[in-house]
Every structure is written in structure tokens, then in C-alpha cells.
Amino acid sequence: MGLCYYSLTFAETGAYGQCSDPDTIIGKDNMMKSTPENRAAINALLLCAGLFLIGPLGADTSVWEVRSDSNTVYLGGTVHLLRPTDYPLPEEFEQAYQAATEIYLETDLNSMGDLSVQAQMLQQLTYQDERSLKTVLSEEAYNALSDYTAQIGMPLMILEKFKPGMVVSTLQVLEFQRIGFTPQGVDAYFNTRAKGDGKNLGQLETIQDQIGFLASMGEGNESEFILLSLDDLEETDEIMDEMIAAWRAGNNDGLARLFVTEMKTEAPDLYDSLLRQRNLNWIPQIEQMLDDRDTEFVLVGAAHLVGPDGLLALLRARGYQVRQL
Image (cartoon, rainbow, N blue to C red; front, top):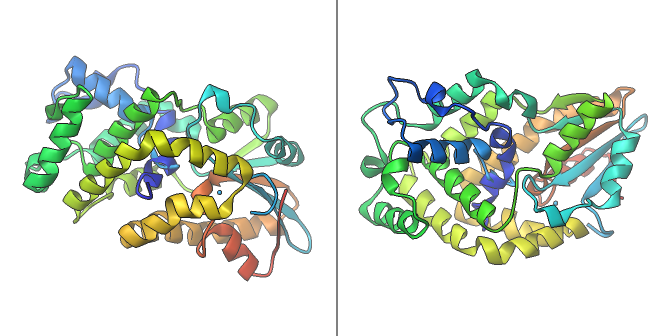
């Protein structure tokens, strides 16, 4: 299930990207024809262009208080997709939200409705040349993908021009929808709350950054990436209850085992680009927050908090006081 983190992490990139007119995005010159089937697949992608990326220690919550000599920042480990039955959230999320003057998410969810952003997503997440899944995948990987899509009633030809990251994201969002999950996860919930309450909203990286991460998924190892992802998809239903329980309880070891450890072993390059490097990029921003006068509540995918390269370990190593609410 480690690779499936990538979709769970990048759920923000697509959760707000539903397109009312996919024909506008595809365009007349795009190599994919605009058919009802393609529109369904594209809307699935735009619903959650990065499910992988879901994309959290002693007490019972995934909310943490980080203190410097002069200020406090709250860190919340999130699940980007949840079921209606997963609400209400643990009360510590509300405690941190009420204490904060600014809310920071991984990226700007509110721009996902822009047609220009949606067009950019399709431009970068599909092959614009002679390449297709048939040409970039091994026979084994292509046949396995064809068998899986046939099993769920989606002809592979619909996905033929999608890059691997887009393919897996599309299949994952369909699987998560099948078992009752929606894009109304923790990030979307507090994005809506902050807008309604007039709290300042910020982001740690741009939409373009997240699209770029998703576009590069599996690049150079497309067949291995697809095969590992298909294995993960088969386990989705049975593992999600365990994952949600670990998140609600703030079970750092459990979450690391479910997502971080396996990814680090099976796909070290993916682990480095999706978790380690992004965490290192976020640390200076969080340190700036610890030096200002505002109180920020930073909400990131739970896997970004845990493990030796997680935000909690990195902040502790820099001498900040970190405690679980």
C-alpha cells in the first residue's frame, strides 16, 4: 500500500478540479477524442488527480503543537479523502483550528476550478506525442492493466494517452468512490471552514508543483510502477479501515508501516521526491511561521509527518519542542 500514498497525497490537486465541460479542456487538437467514456475518465481524474498522494504518536490524535521560543505552530496530519461516517473529526483538529489565525494547506484548492489549471493538468498528464501506454509499458504490465480495467468495466483505450500517474490516479479515485470515500477530506473541510470564517489561507507549494509531481510518476520505470500500483489497488478495501484507525489515533508507527516504510523500500526514488524532498522544502516555511506573530495551523498529508524524514523528526532535530495534542 506504500505506493498508494501518492494518490492520497495529491488528492488536493484533483479534489477541486471537477470539470463542467471536459470538451473545453480536451480541445480539438488533443490526441484523445472527446467521447462520453473519455469525459467520465477525465472527470474521475479531475475529481482526484492524485489519490496516491494521501495523499500521521503517544496520545490519540494526528495534531501536533510545535513551539519555538516565541511562537506556536500546529501541524495536522490529514487524510485527503474520507467517508461521511468518518466525521466528526477528532476534537483536537477543532482545537487547533480555533487557536489559529492562518490555515496552511499543501496547495491552493480554490484555484482547481479554473479552466486554465484544468487545461494545464491535461496537457502535462497526457502524452502529447506518439507515445501511449501501449508503447511505454511492457507486455506484462500492459496486459495486467488491461485485465484490471476490463474487470471494473473501463476499456483500456480510454486511458491509452494518459501518463502512468494519471492512469493510477484515475483508477484509484474510482476504487475509493466504490468503497464510499469522497473528496471531502480533512483538507477540503478546513479549506471551506477557513473561507467561511474569514481566516487567511496559505499553501506550501503551487498547483503547478503538484501537477509536475504527478506527471513524473513512474517516469523511466513505467511498467514497474503500474504493476506495483495494481497490486496496491487490490488491497485498498481491506487496508483503509486500518489506515483511518491509525490516523484517528495518531498512531505514528502504524501509519509509517502502512505508507512510508514500504514506499521507501519498494520505490526509493518516489519516496525521495514525494516525501523527503517536499518535507525538506516545507521546513524553512514552517520555521518562518515559528518566527512570526501569527498562529498557523498547517495541514498536510499524514505520511509527511511520520518516519525519520517526516516533519516531526525534522523539526525536533532543529531544536523545536514538539508535542501531540
